[in-house]
Image 1 (cartoon, rainbow, N blue to C red):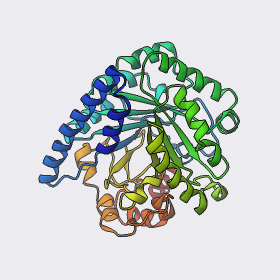
Image 2: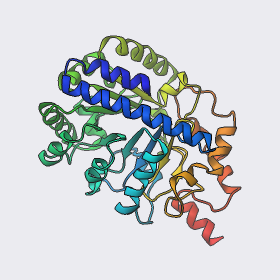
Image 3: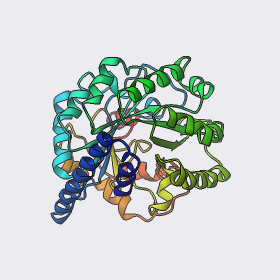
Length: 360
């Protein structure tokens, strides 16, 4: 994580305003790391990274969306007040980075105010870009610790095919407004066997850099939708992604992050607190967005208590996740994770399982 921040400092040094922001962020992350060390000393393992899906609602219907397939609940979403408490707890524990996902995060009207109150945390705000109007973009200019990450699937054809007609045009228009306002922003692409060549093509990436994008997030497709296993990257593409990332990190002057691909170089799966945890919109604290099982709810306990989850301990104590191949390790072993949850009460899996447990 510190390597990423130092790279961010290097690529923004030509812009004094952005470089000053990067220096402040790096300093704040060192402070957060000290807080995590203090927590570890008292027996609390705090991951530096939290993924928080702030809402299950979305204004698009993207094909194969994991959030729509895995995280649809009929429970109420966490209230703005509880969200504010959660972010305060995260800061005090030393969480460095919070990735905000959805659904579409901008459907939460309190979101920008929530982030403004926590300048100590670096927020990666993943959005489909359709709601990035002038007012929100103007507000983002005043929040240097917030990095909007706009979703694309390659070019116009690939993006509109998955996300709906006109999406590519909306996203690129929003990029233009962000770039004009001097806001540091990125893009995110879900890599499938079909769009891999275009989404990771150097000419395509250079065109996005020309639009002002300096952060690229590649997420390998996880086949949460039945019958889509053939969309996963094949072994040749996984190896090719490694080669391209190595080259682009040397030559393109931008940040490149690949999930779960980068776990191959980091000692295996980082879920369950090894590097990050996932919090869904309803307060369940889960190992990973692609592993929707939990034994801890933030509607019933603090974040510190949730991080002591027996499920997380069981996953971290196993050596089942020490090897990575560019695919989601927990998704491949979802029956194992489900079995760990079923051995413990209360059962907090997807809503269908929760209802079945109650009936039994």
